[in-house]
Image (cartoon, rainbow, N blue to C red; front, side):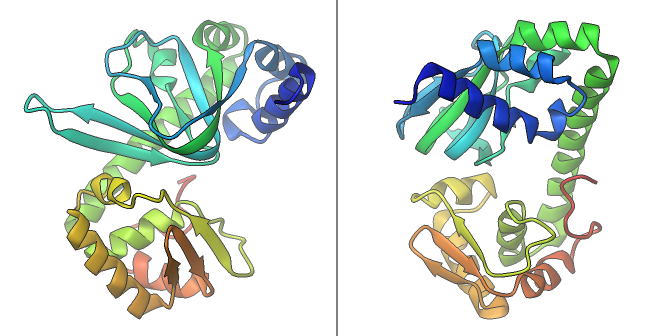
Length: 243
């Protein structure tokens, strides 16, 4: 395990790279890093359940985390699957005292947690940071609206392609290698598909775009070809994460 000082330095470095924290000064970021906790969580660890007290926000450094809800019938609905750079728990910054979903580690992960009260204090002190939080939540809402559009107009292979593009940058010049959760059922549920539908759609996506799938690894040699195929049935252009 890294010494505490090295952990704090690592956390600070990751926070500096997040758009949400751009309005914060170096001193403010250092204060967050001082009270942040960096943990390595094993696959299967439940970080919290729905309606748990909303006391922290979380940043995924590596690995995969799924966010989920349970229906009254006891079924599980996966609302999101997050990897490196993914945030969750921000709802608490808008006054929600309970988590609206549960969170479970689906591949061994490194996760930073930051006490909610520290961020609330920064919002009170720094109006630009407060605006960044509002913009982040608005962006998430727009992404949810876009997903409703996708389920209406995109084919199953295109929806998988859109999920993959979420983890690609617009300036990728060479081949892109993505590592998905080993259990692709998690991704299938995230996209509202049955596992067998997901498998058929992934095979079709390979045929149409030339991507290669080896176990949990996806190799994209021609990113533009994947973009052209996926985004042709979408009202937004790639990269759309900041739109």
